[in-house]
Length: 111
Length: 118
Image (cartoon, rainbow over the protein chains, first blue to last red):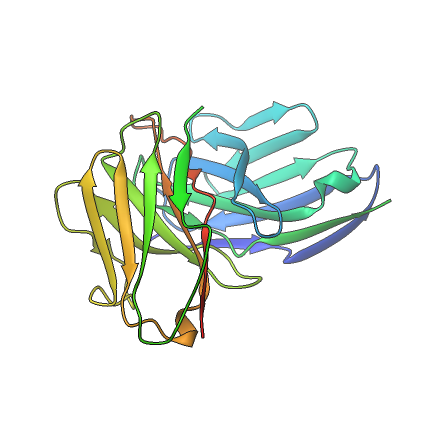
């Protein structure tokens, strides 16, 4: 089955700096890669996703890149703000099968 | 957007009792729903895939007789934790997709149920 690894587990940045979180996946048939943001005690919220036919996608301060050959994808947050502080999860799935999550990255943005 | 409703949001029960958690897709039909469990400061771990009109598929290590899943309609799946023990205390969260197709679509999550077994 699919195995998703995520690094780093914690990340602390100064407000205004960039943050990068990286994930690798094992199943070459996976074709959908979302990123979720989870605040304490709340449900995960989708922030951006990318499909296997695209190498990069951007939405304002957030961007995701995908390298299918190397089986890794990354989340980039620019101009970080304190409200970006949360736990971020990457995930991978094949078609509309079940979704496997990375271990999570706790991002802290210091004002 | 797609909304998944989950109840209750919080439950405290005594050891040995059973707890039922409901998950509803409010504005779309979901033939498949996914149940995850999340322990403090850990990731979302898939427990089982709930299939409308058929048996659920359980992940390795998840006891099907302990975590009963019923997907009776296209908008409702229930998870019953039977004979709960303190080690079952966790955050249980359901999810579903409203899209189809080969390229995948996001999961929409319920608000989760925080179960505490005393």
